[in-house]
Image 1 (cartoon, rainbow, N blue to C red):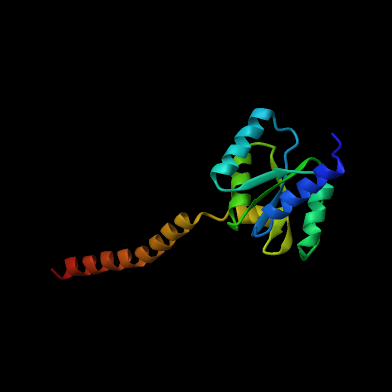
Image 2 (image 1 turned 90 degrees about the vertical axis):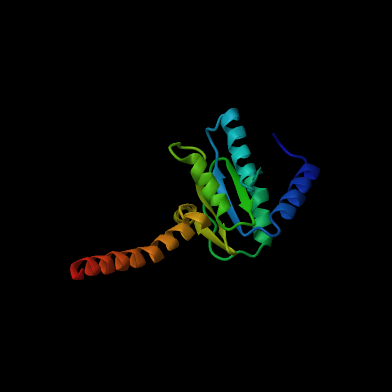
Length: 161
């Protein structure tokens, strides 16, 4: 469906407002999603605090050109939407989690910290564990040597007794 000039201006204004302070933008190829899957996808993103917008690629490119991003933009082929958030990892993680075991939606690339990022870099960001998981891993690493020392001291005490 062709958009009128006024509709394009409205979409540009909306995207400019939504992408103003976003840390990470993920380009998502959603070709092949059914309506019910799309609703589930949007709901999952919304619950995680991630915005999602589908717009024409030319309009998306106009917005990104005004942001002064470094690097080269990934090829946006097919049907593309954008997921965005002020949280650096949430958009990539949520799209990745929703697409596990499925062919769509798929990550095409994105923007991270003011630079274009290819698919592999965005996927690497998506697989970084959450803060809580990282903190529990650190706690385990700190506890492990102390636990081994306590076992060794206990065995020495048994030998001497």
